[in-house]
Image (cartoon, rainbow, N blue to C red; front, side, top):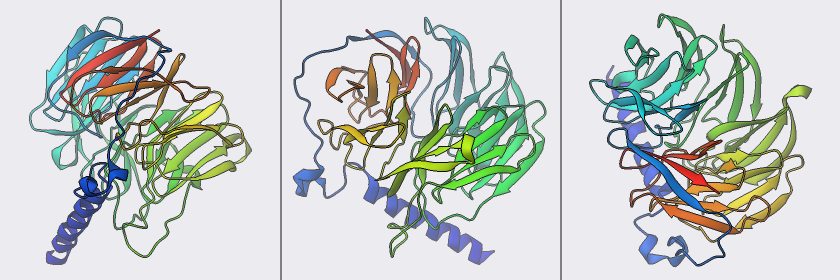
Length: 385
């Protein structure tokens, strides 16, 4: 027992050191201008962004807290324990509840079951009215949002285990574990449930497609392989949300690559680019978008991976993963700004500030605009014209 505890403490200490080195504004930033955030510059406005509505959902935010949008409803949770469902068109609260104790991740929903993760690896499911359905215990702490669909609530815990609980009863349906590295990132990561498959990225640089009903791995592919002499150098987590465009399944890693696989041909790699992202990627029918470690935003051709453009004007501004709306590509930054870039050439088209707190939660693109969960606990719909 003593050995296990020592290893846990050591791993936490190493993780903390790793996070310090990955911070966008490090303790050495003031000694090296190349790490300073780029100042905001003037540009020719190409879109108009405005706040359609703002709704308080609780207190705080963070990488493990991402809004979920289903039809005309948006779900959100905060570390302080608040969980709510709002009308996407108006921001009106449809239901809201406060759970005892702190939350570590949320929210996932299929419209019938809404799930969050609480301290100690507790998974909590709520029904359509926001009342508690059940609680279950994962094998360890959960710090990425649960994925809900196909009759399951799936979580990925800190011991690199993926577990699925029955959405109706909370009974454990299956559990799957892969060997994990000594060190992993704490950043934006999400799993998807699509057509009966759970799509998950792992800290070992791999993407997996798992049968949601029984936990059988249907496909597994390497986005990147770890390299380097130290634990920090070998970090190659799949970050952000796996992207699906037609037959293509795409992912990006930290200190690794961006790859698109063709799932209609056995999951063979179609193209790859040497790349490193801290927060993930976004796609549309033509391009794959991602910000690199220095927050330079890149666009690659979706079918062949050739670089289309890059935008350096937001360097070191600690950007979120890009999301795509019809008018532009949107990213949030450390000063509470949402920036809009041209999908065709990367030019800055617009920006809007939603407060001074850093935007860490992933943005969500909707037909009505971009949903943003701010660092202060507000949910905001930004309309774009």
